Image (cartoon, rainbow, N blue to C red; front, side, top):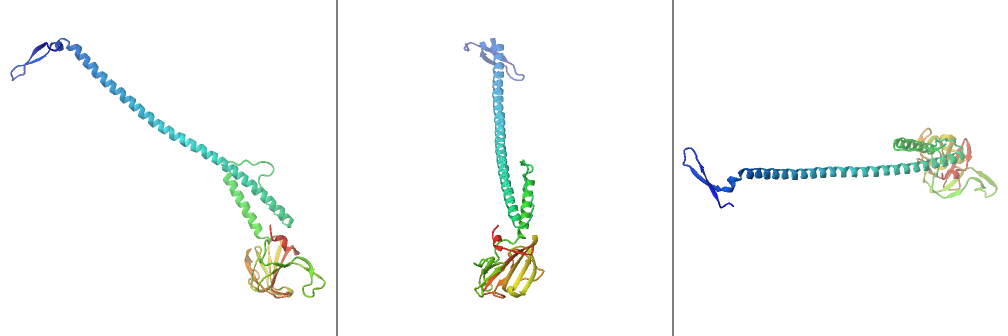
Length: 284
């Protein structure tokens, strides 16, 4: 097909004419060949553009998929957080209900001791809905409530002023000096060593610190709610009249002064000027 050739004269100004031989078939069908070549080029360009568009679309799709995956992960995390929040709220509600129950119990015990605390109780008269918006306020309420309970409790003579063994309880007993007849013992006696620290059992104000008859050296402390405590037979007092003390403050040292058969502490509690059994106050 391409063996048969035709000569073409090419004249270039200033130079000799040149002869170029090309296949005759190309000259005969040059239009068709040109059109085919153009079509081929267009097809190639179109194919390249098509595949480039597909690649770009795949890249965009991959980016969108990655973004969607991140959104889904955030949603899952959010749902998990919301679930944990609901569980936390439920646990908080249970804790608040336990606190309410404890406060009711404290109220009952204080009432038996002659104290009308009237501590506010939440969740009474019907259920209280607790949600994420008011749980902080409710937590603050309970924090203040328990702080108030602690403040009230600090003014009530609870616990022991000395950890020695009890040698004589509140009530009637045999006269320890004559071993005959009975006498009223208005406190609790704790055995101890000379100089052992004696501590106040509640916050209060010292009303007396010195020597007083059968008490020997004694410290008297006035507390709120009509309470008073007395610490007798001390070898020495460690406080002064008018001084404010907190529960646990050392008010004196154990001794053997006054009407005493040996080193010990005589401890009394008065409620509205009436002597009561301190042993009921050793535990809440």
